[in-house]
Every structure is written in C-alpha cells, then in structure tokens.
Length: 257
Ligand SMILES: C[S@@+](CC[C@H](N)C(=O)[O-])C[C@H]1O[C@@H](n2cnc3c(N)ncnc32)[C@H](O)[C@@H]1O
Image (cartoon, rainbow, N blue to C red; front, side, top):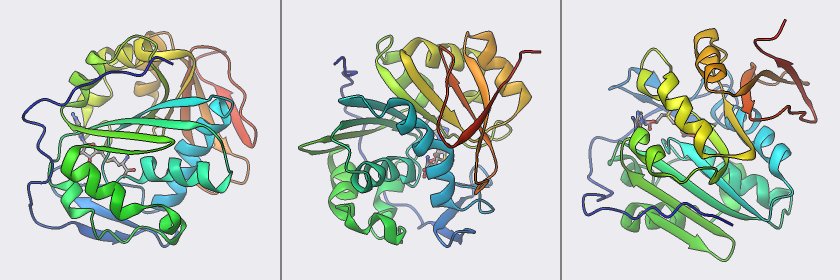
C-alpha cells in the first residue's frame, strides 16, 4: 500500500465556531444544509442527500474497487461528511473486510464543530458518529482498527498537488457546482486528479456537464455518463484510466462517436 503521507500544518486548527448550519430537508427525508457563501446546498435536495451520496458516489466506487484490501479515498470536499460516513456505512452493511483510508480537504473550519449534533440519517446510527466527528474536529484524524480518516483545512487544489502520484483508488469529486466553485472543476485541477489516481481507480461525480467532461477527457480520463438501472437518482459521471463496467449501472462512454 502507498498511503499519501500528509502532515497537518500548525494552522490546521479545526473547530472555530461560526453560526450554525441552515438545515434543509431533502427528498429522501435526510437532512442537507444551505451554504450562504456559495449560495448553494451541500446536496441535491431533489435526489436526497443520502441517496445522492450512495448512488452517485459510494456504490459505483465500491463496485469498482471492492476487492481491494486497502481502499484509499479522496473525498472532495468533506462538507457535511456524507460521502465519508456513507463509505463506512456501505462497508458495514455489506460486511466488507477492507481497510478504508479517507483523505478529505475542506476550507470551512467551522463545519466540524457544527456537525457534532447534525441530524444524520438513521442509516448511520450504527457508526460511532460522535466519536468520529469529535476526533476530526479536535485532531483532524479519526482512527479505529480498520479505518483512517483525515480532514485538513486546506484548499483542495493545494492538497491534491501534495498527494503522491497514483496514491488514490477513489475520488469523490463533490465540490459545489462548476458555476459556484470553478477552481475545483478546471482542466488543470483534473490533470492533478488524473496524476494521483491509481491505474485501476475511479472518480465519481454528480456533474453531467459537457464542459467538465471535456476538461476530464483532455487530461486522459475515460469518461462515462452513469445512471443507476432503477433510476433512483438522476445520473452523474464516472471517470477512470481504462474502460469500466459497473453492475447495476448503465454506462455510456462520453466523447466517442
Ligand atoms: C458540495 S459540498 C461537499 C459535500 C460533501 N461531500 C458531503 O457529502 O456532505 C462542497 C464543500 O467543498 C468545500 N470547498 C469549496 N471550495 C473548496 C476548496 N477550494 N478547497 C477545499 N474545500 C472547498 C466547501 O466548503 C463545501 O464544504
């Protein structure tokens, strides 16, 4: 295994308190929140926060990588923590033996304090939620026998630049929309994601934007439109370095005649 070794710097102090989150109920009953700085919600309220996380990120990623003994995940960005927590939830309900190493940059230092009492969905209730959030808030790291989670207060672009080449198996590309958060969708940024992705790795994203897909194609990614067979949420994209097939998903390769 080749985990990225990222050391926290002195200014990585998590937990400055700012006004609490403006909660929003989403279509599947799970809570998301509204971010006034970006003027956007953390999740699609139409698809549902939990459903979006599971069907656009976690299930495609675990389907592609479920035989790994150690799965190294880059969660862009931590936000309310759904993608990180849903990864632990998925491993738990499917009794998968793998170790999870989750690395997540986040700009907003107030989030983790505000997440201590976040009304996460019932599905997460068998996870040590409070322990995880408190450890991440206080030390930026949570660890148990099979889990390592790191959250660093840093610009995601800088974080990705520091990661070793081919050191990540899964990228959850879950920034705010390209319109509101353009720096995390540029061709230059995707070139870095391509560099750090392992040869058999996968990138998942909710975006179906042609401009974003073109940026990814230009960096060498094989890009697919990705829709779950049961159509529980709208489609997204998955990207990889080689051709990909995912059970239970219709994949249509983008950019080929
Ligand atoms: C759509 S939310 C992520 C939702 C999250 N994946 C979840 O499951 O709850 C986007 C997050 O990216 C963070 N962010 C935006 N630009 C960033 C940047 N340049 N570097 C690090 N974090 C950034 C925002 O503060 C926000 O928390």
